[in-house]
Amino acid sequence: MRMLPIAASVLALGAAACSGDQAESTTPPTDGTTPATNQTAAQRAPVGASANVALADGEGASAGTATLRQGPQGVVIRVEATGLTPGWHGIHLHAVGTCEGPAFQSAGSHVHGGAGEAVHGLLNEGQSDSGDLPNVYADAQGRVNAEVFTTFARLADSGGGEHLLDEDGSALLIHASPDDHTSQPIGGSGDRVACGVIQAG
Image (tube, rainbow, N blue to C red):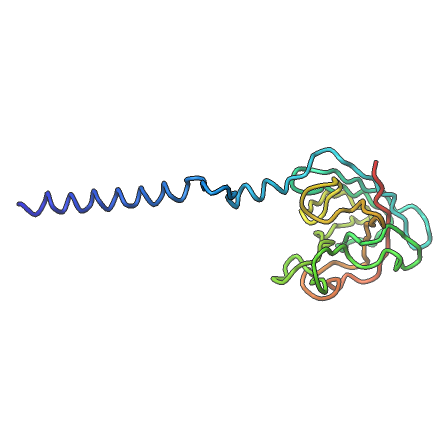
């Protein structure tokens, strides 16, 4: 019978130790450093910047429009494209704000701010390509109405991601085929079939 109070005391001490560990894990640091969650918050961008894109095909005909809007942690891109083949299409942010047809090679490679060669693919564990975006789908009439979001780019002068409105600008490109989000250099998405310069608006 004398063992029960001792066992209860041990349990109480264990519970106190556990609650002490929890308190330590949630207590803000006192050495001036910032918790990881606040470091993420520090990268938030001022909301409100916007940009417009007039898409054109390789012959220079209109292929629709896109609008970009800055949020606190990334950019929302609304795409309203026409004249595409039905099905999935890769869509990417490119590093130079020029769209000279028919192949649009003037837009350069994908936006990339890291050191070394860019690794493409949203499903690639080594991904470092800031131009990567989810695919968009064209209906039976070749029309795309979609919104995609990226944390890899920004319109604002400050915040996380690569600045799309820098000195040489940037472009939004749609490809002929879907992006597999893994293989190099562009996920097998094929030819560049529509392009538009991203312009502050």
